[in-house]
Length: 287
Image (cartoon, rainbow, N blue to C red; front, top):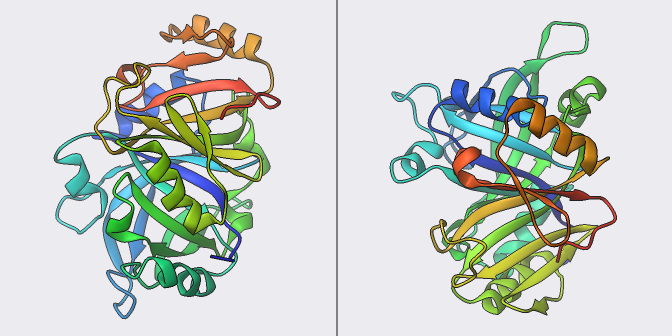
């Protein structure tokens, strides 16, 4: 596939958006206000209100989405997922054109869905509301680890705004997504066929590099992720400006965390709505 793709954002499915907002605010994320989705059920369908909404943490590179059900009487992609579990749900790879990305992806993955529209109201710089618009390509069952999307932002300036990219925990970038899989090499080769990257094998896993970001594939027997379903998206890696300041904030806010041998700070899925969080520095090799 020749279309350039990058790690745009990760979505964590949560059972209670209000509670999740409290938890992630305590973790030091500056979250946007609640935003409700509207979207097309299919490529030829009409835009309609959906039953999902989100809070987002926007970074200099990428963002984190907390997504949940706001109206159980309306359709949403997240409701069926939440019937069985919470945690890692969406991996979105950014593209310049959803149409071009679809045409490239469907050549190798024929079950790829045609582009659909999505929108949500967000706060505008002047204090009013504005409509953020997106076009998404859902990759479908060839990627069972997560709801894998190729996303085109039509209104990028509306959601990446300076005040919302400053976080008390010091996060500046989404550095990587972590998958738990039965066969790390197979998964890395499969994703590599989508993003045009060559897998790198590591003890117990494999990785793909994307413009300074990394997709990590960890074997099911790896003791660092005993809690996760397999296959699944079980964690994310974030770059912070100063790990010392992040650690101080965690201690101040009563956040339970640990540190690994590399000095990275780890927050367990039990303390982050079923999703593992790793905090590191920008210059750290996370693969």
